[in-house]
Length: 599
Image (cartoon, rainbow, N blue to C red; front, top):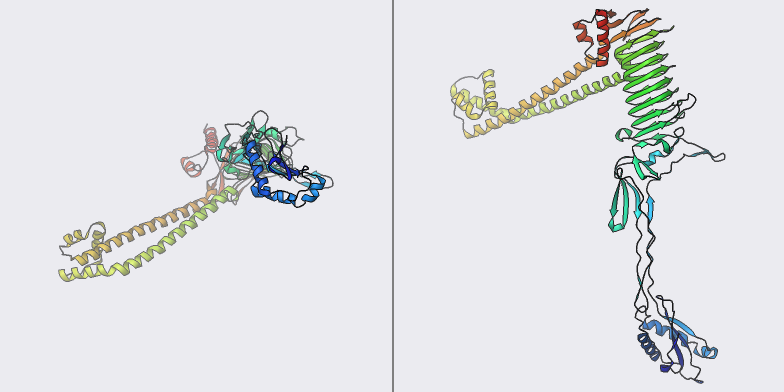
């Protein structure tokens, strides 16, 4: 209810009003003309109004949010400007006196995902039809590295309390809290940032980030098959050789169904495809297993590769194992094992055809095993390291090594020559002067051998040893000069030894290169079981005319006579010359052949 302040103000009625909302009271002053005074001459005295207001503030125990005196006076003055008109209309004029400080509600908590977990279907090819390019499914975005922040949880704040006009606290309302989401503690770490009132989930391993209902957030090095339809979409792990990642494709063995669609790409450290790979697809990784068919023009590149069937595709790797290779396919590697191949080109360091070769060509750097060769057109078995890409790379690397070693030798030799000139210019005069002292004192002429013996004694002994050996007194100046000469000569001889070592290393590398260039003379070709058709046996540019083989034969190349010979027995010389570079698998095949021939 308003409180009338009129007892202290003659011409005006002043009333103190309180907004009665509990805890949010506002104080107002209302002013109106005093109707009991008919002809007022002077409306009011500002000071008496201000004093009255202050008195009532104290009476009401208002202690917070009070307006400044200057603001109150300004409001009253504004009212009194139109006092005569207000007096006639008998209207109220009201202005605020005291305001509470309102409480501040707390901020709501929030969760921010720093990684977008939704797979992106790619770009729209045709705006009119809505056709989408499904090549990129966005898995590259979910590949994260150890330590990378994934989710930021900002916690709710309690808010800030306010004060009412009686200086009593007004309780604030806290923000709505959020729950820290579930996460896999083996792959994701939780870190509290107290100063920011946040909790951050970080990757504790490198892999792909996922989120599901049961586990919450988790990281797996595998691309999980239940997350994506592998018949659509590239998945490429950049720098996969440094990142432990696996793509597993659960496909269909149906010959009409491709687990990896034509033209698509998979790249990861390990790739396992249960099913077929479509035409023009690209599969690249360290370890690759494909249970089905790899179609024409697809490219498979890896270190260890296992494939069910290759039809007209291109396969490059280190260790390669394929059941069948057909229709102008190309297989290039180090250790290649194939059951059957037809009308295709195989090239590797060692090649094993465990069942049958039909009308194809096999080129190896050191060894070929072919159980059976058939076909109406030519099949060629050739030892030609220079036609094997891996050998060419080794040869190129060795040539580079020779050049580098030669440059090191030349550079060190030039430095040695400079050291020689420095030694001669700075110290040779000292030793020559010493020789003259000896010759004058002893009345002799020193030979080159004697001078060399003195220099060796200086280098490996001391000036005192020389003095004692020659029975010759050496003064202090000469002693210092000879000591410096001996130290310089010792350094020069060390440099010479270093130059000689580098030169020998260069010679050794050249010899390795020369030996590599004659590698084709140490190759072996082993044909086992009955074969038919026309088969060519070749060593580099030397070929054996097509013949029919119906027995176990081991062929080698005679460099001196430049002829190819079948070996009936493996002698010690042959073993030393031809078998030193073969793998244990190749040696086992040869030894088995030798035991059969001996029996």
